[in-house]
Length: 346
Ligand code: ATP
Ligand code: MG
View (cartoon, rainbow, N blue to C red):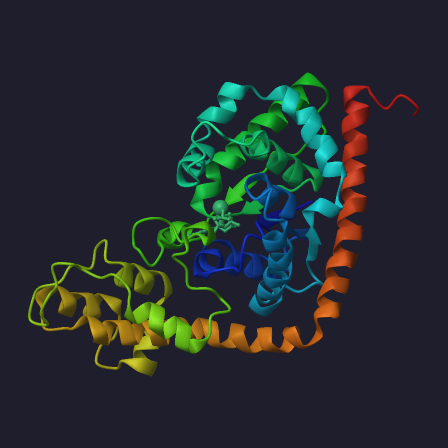
């Protein structure tokens, strides 16, 4: 059986980083017909681990994320889209997995370390936040997923989940499946930087182009993007490396975009060469980047407008998905309890 699980935290609307890092791949995998089951989870319980006092934000974001999914082409006929908190079996699984993980191992997890720093928790780290890699292992194993399409920031999470699986399977009985991460083919898409060019694009950092931004918002964000600080006049030689505008072009531009929007160049290498030898202004490059991004965003925006017309149908879809997901998670929990020898009344 080939089974996928992927998830997003409903801490805001989804952005271009999600699209290239994970969403686009999910839709391709969904449509490949190669998978027996695809589970797509809105991780609200996980989002609460660092938003305990902001339930309102999480609740509102569930609808946004569901609309983002549908408008990017996730199809509830082919994928089970569900809400994490509606599957209580996941908490039970986490509770047993907690006994297989040490505190020092959690503290060593590079993603957790980095996120603690970004969130400025200092000594006040919520226990739920520190242990979220364990709950993530529960999410993946509950659905017996062997494939997890993610961005690079999630690799240490996957490694931790694999360790938990191995530990469970050797301690009790081999009932859990070890998952594999699937990264985007394009290295740059595995960790798309934000508009600031410094950190990865992340909802929590406010450096995003959202899939639901209007054309005017996208344009404004692109036009005010950071570029090469040494490229002051058009005649100056420019740098394309570490230049966010070119990083985005590397991630999004295809040869056909040149034909359609900027026939002066055949491809990105030619454009880069011109920028590097001087004589090409940032505004022109940004205008092209805006057109390239719109080629992806415009169809997503149009589909979103359609789904927005019937919000109750979106929630009905989530409810149906959650019921279906719960059945599978209950089955796994039963296997786990049997493996552990705590299914006393069976
Ligand atoms: P938060 O700041 O709330 O953690 P986020 O923007 O990091 O939000 P997540 O919901 O944590 O988004 O991530 C969902 C998925 O999107 C994960 O698979 C993650 O690897 C991927 N992803 C997130 N940001 C990027 C990015 N900038 N580039 C590539 N992939 C990304
Ligand atoms: Mg994140």
